[in-house]
Length: 607
Ligand SMILES: Cc1cc2nc3c(=O)[nH]c(=O)nc-3n(C[C@H](O)[C@H](O)[C@H](O)COP(=O)(O)OP(=O)(O)OC[C@H]3O[C@@H](n4cnc5c(N)ncnc54)[C@H](O)[C@@H]3O)c2cc1C
Ligand SMILES: *[C@@H]1O[C@H](CO)[C@@H](O)[C@H](O)[C@H]1NC(C)=O
Ligand SMILES: *[C@@H]1O[C@H](CO)[C@@H](O)[C@H](O)[C@H]1NC(C)=O
Ligand SMILES: *[C@@H]1O[C@H](CO)[C@@H](O)[C@H](O)[C@H]1NC(C)=O
Ligand SMILES: *[C@@H]1O[C@H](CO)[C@@H](O)[C@H](O)[C@H]1NC(C)=O
Ligand SMILES: *[C@@H]1O[C@H](CO)[C@@H](O)[C@H](O)[C@H]1NC(C)=O
Ligand SMILES: *[C@@H]1O[C@H](CO)[C@@H](O)[C@H](O)[C@H]1NC(C)=O
Ligand SMILES: *[C@@H]1O[C@H](CO)[C@@H](O)[C@H](O)[C@H]1NC(C)=O
Image 1: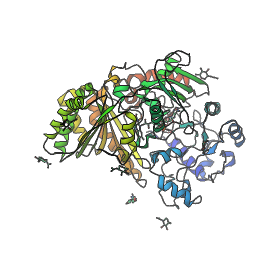
Image 2 (image 1 turned 180 degrees about the horizontal axis):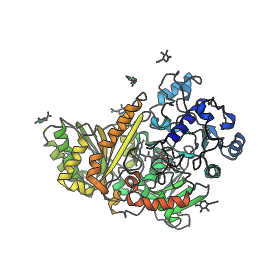
Image 3 (image 1 turned 90 degrees about the vertical axis):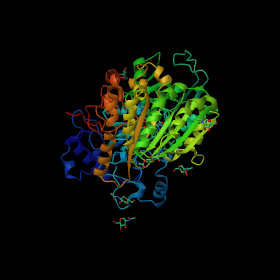
Image 4 (image 1 turned 30 degrees about the vertical axis):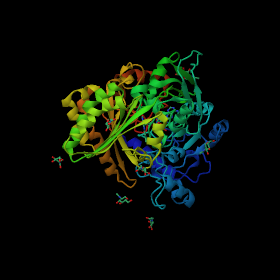
């Protein structure tokens, strides 16, 4: 990320001004009421620099009375956003509140309830300004990337008023839901945050009618933006249907925000499609505060862009309609093996990869976590499958795996679930009832996390030489997960059906890797992890060439040429739609459409 010196100066100003913040009582910051204590503040321009967004350290930031007038029109008062570790540090230390934060620091539901917290806490911090829950109470608590003011949005009108207010004043604005974003896109220093988490609601339609009254013919679950998947899954199940959504520990990924807007993959996507493929209609508030409804009949360009263009680049969703599907029993296969070195690991992965095209055609999909050339697991599903079909299609791989020297099989089990909901509860929510890989323990909430992903086209799995090279690249990775979410209906869908990277349609798998660090890691150590993660995917990028891509919701901060990596040839069309609905660049995010020529916080354009 480019960070010109003007931006660094800007950020250091924010740190200086946030250090002056006092207490949680409602106090609308504006430079007119703040001491200009530092020498750098004295030399600051009085308003945002030309072309820049206005932030809380600029004199263009609205006055207290302007904020109060807006606040009076909203469902909830505007609040000062506190960093998650606020009560763990002097002078605001509070033993009870700090202990609650310490106990819950790794809990993804608790983190999503904190307006100032991200799941990957490194995105809350700026260099030299961390308000960490776990550090000594004497260490300073800075505002970091946590926005200055928050809007606790629970109605469409809240979002319309807030966006219009920000648009009229050119304010830096951020949209935050659960905070799962791997690039912390819901936060930004000195910004106004629209927090959608408490905007709750779900509705079931046995046969969904579009806004123009025409009948879609599909059952659907409509969600308000704050709904989380754990809620939507249960609600769908109560109505005897299934919806596909995020698979995070505790089901805390949002059902009405970044997941469906950025693509959204699920273990059952080859059977039901991606999240963006299943979206029937969206209500969006545009940057200027105007609400529009988009679906296949109206505002079709925007409907195309919003499904895969990434949140919130094409507006803020206030209602999102997920197509639902008939419930079916799920046949599941669980496998775990240890390997005694690189050779046996490569052999095992290669063997499985070469089996994947046939498994896909038989209806299987799933995840394959792996670790350090030593461990390989399968968590696979066959919707509507039974023992006969399961055994005849998975059997050849199991026999081949047993024959590989140096492979020790730990788990080889099958189980039939009455439906997706019962599979989800048993394998993702329930930490006790674990078969094979413990997915409930796979969360990284509350630590620093770097991620990266790469899409792997089916052609590579069909070519033994290429498959072997892929296996060798995977063997060099400390840990990761193969997400076999392509093929099936994904491959049958027109690559231009929505804005998602067209290469998704020819991919079988998305390899996703992570680097994590403790909160006390030094910046050079973090930088080394980031570079390492990017480098680990280089062999896969080389193998796929232009047929690969990254999943924008599992992004590598350092990926080369992010517009092409995220969207391929769809980027040009996305950019032109973006320029029509967001001419003032109000809703830019890291690696978002239209953000290529902006600084790393999208506050000032790069000259
Ligand atoms: C533990 C974990 C598990 C995951 N599992 C999966 C998975 O199984 N499949 C998968 O595809 N992805 C998965 N992801 C990635 C996930 O899709 C992204 O993190 C996604 O962006 C989360 O969206 P959110 O709304 O919950 O989070 P947030 O971080 O709050 O928001 C993400 C982005 O969407 C924007 N946004 C939020 N709400 C709105 C809105 N109403 N309108 C417009 N923009 C909005 C935000 O500004 C931000 O840019 C996982 C991530 C984690 C951390
Ligand atoms: C916190 O810092 C203080 C002052 O530097 C020190 O005396 C104390 O031992 C530290 N506490 C912990 C738990 O590290
Ligand atoms: C936001 O609104 C919810 C729902 O009314 C409420 O429970 C919560 O305390 C509010 N939070 C803040 C920070 O205002
Ligand atoms: C296939 O059947 C055999 C014998 O009943 C059993 O041991 C094996 O676990 C089954 N495998 C699968 C994938 O169902
Ligand atoms: C792994 O086990 C196989 C079979 O026992 C053996 O031939 C091979 O040498 C072992 N490899 C290593 C690295 O130990
Ligand atoms: C799975 O992981 C969770 C979270 O770390 C843990 O609480 C649980 O005990 C683990 N389950 C098993 C069966 O090991
Ligand atoms: C970070 O903290 C852990 C203990 O929590 C300690 O072992 C480690 O040395 C610390 N690392 C740094 C870089 O301070
Ligand atoms: C808001 O922006 C949209 C898209 O550019 C435009 O069509 C609409 O007229 C604008 N509304 C107002 C009130 O300016």
